[in-house]
Image 1: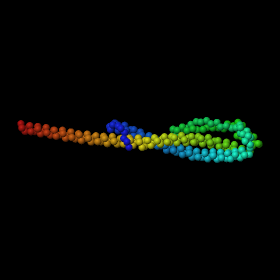
Image 2 (image 1 turned 90 degrees about the vertical axis):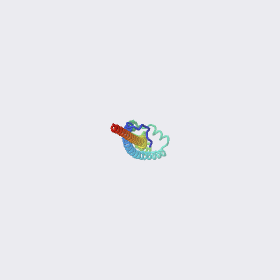
Image 3 (image 1 turned 30 degrees about the vertical axis):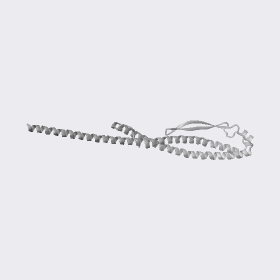
Image 4 (image 1 turned 30 degrees about the horizontal axis):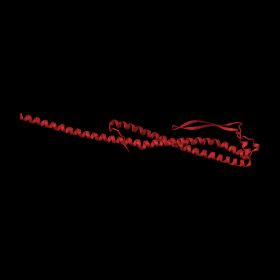
Length: 225
């Protein structure tokens, strides 16, 4: 790993140790967040699968009945029967927070004109058309929930990717770089300390040697007297 370009001083090493501690703590928090995001994402995916199957089943039944109804009724009559719908769906969008991700929540309610989903008289239409209308009505709720679930899954997937990149950057780049740089500074400081110790020992030897020589001269001068 590449070490950072810093001065090999004790102050710099203390600063890097603090940053390493912060990065390590941040890595743990992000890792925990990533694990929880993955858990939430998998739950959403399972719910997504259930809603999709429910919606597809209702729509398949609706289309089958509608095809039969088209075969029984004329196209003009079918168009007139479905021209003015009796119900509509009002949707309001709010948001909820999942691990710092704002995901949509759809609040919807059916607004009925006469309380009946059929916009036509039952006496002159086929039972297949009635079944198709009922199936389309049943499919409305899982379809809206499916849209909510898929958008939530998309947003969580994006956040998971962003969090994974940050975790990898800390784990594979920043933290190793801090560790390598701290190790380099520690080695430099030890090397400098050994060099200083060697110099002090040489100075001590020189002072001691000089002191011995001066003592010897003093003794020789005293003997000469």
